[in-house]
Length: 59
Image (cartoon, rainbow, N blue to C red; front, side, top):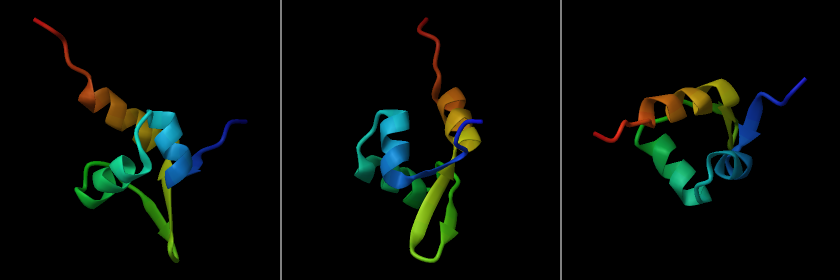
């Protein structure tokens, strides 16, 4: 079974972006997150959905 929830640092690696880039996506409301106290977690399904919405076709 694979991991479903990622910390911001792990999500940065998964998405290939800097940690502050992930924080910016959260603050801008571009990606959903789970907050547990002071910790933020991102669902791998939401990260995959974000990737799909960002895909473009060059024409």
